[in-house]
Length: 298
Image 1 (spheres, rainbow, N blue to C red):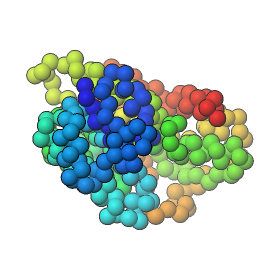
Image 2: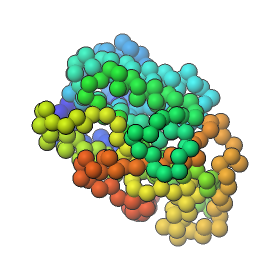
Image 3: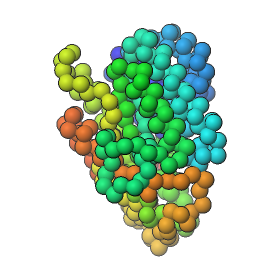
Image 4: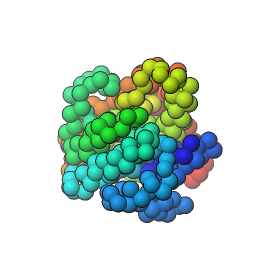
């Protein structure tokens, strides 16, 4: 299946590319055009039109986004262009050739007022520009596309690009002290697990009869469990054998940030697991495997 993958050089994009490449004909797209990818500025409508017309993909996996939450807050127009308008462009032209469409969204579409795992039926109410811009993308996907899947995920980590976990590893191993929020609850998600689970999902979809149960819509795809940022960093230190006394937990509002964050944005993968029968492991197991591989690479 010819599959157009945006954000192919990003943290999640690289993981999906690696997992999918043996069974899918990947058309990798990035803004820079580096690392054997096709250059396309998705904000530019005419570039997207040419891209879709040239490659005519059966499936589009749209991972490209600005995920720096504070940058989005400082530059809301930029966030809107990259996260919302680019998605509008892709969905419009993909809909013209009846492609299936996968959109990667975020736990930050929620306001954090809930204290149990968010499910797909919960009402989005973002509290920052990043969440607003990603929800805008979701709305374009559901408006233009007939065959679509929106996968919300949370707090991605992996080896392909710098992220919160890799930054913490570097700082802990260099002897730095870390101050992190102990009241912000998240679901850490390993990009390799996400990519493999997504592949299993598409396998399941292909087994369904043409007029079978409607499966299009929103799914939460994360590792199981939840923790605070503080608990995540403590677990990193524990696995690495580093004294946790160098880690201080404080309230989120004591940490200077441009953007407000939801205090609770942990997601439930129950709907995904029920549909696929694919059980996603706990975040601690995933973290342990990742750190083992990361140490070998280092």
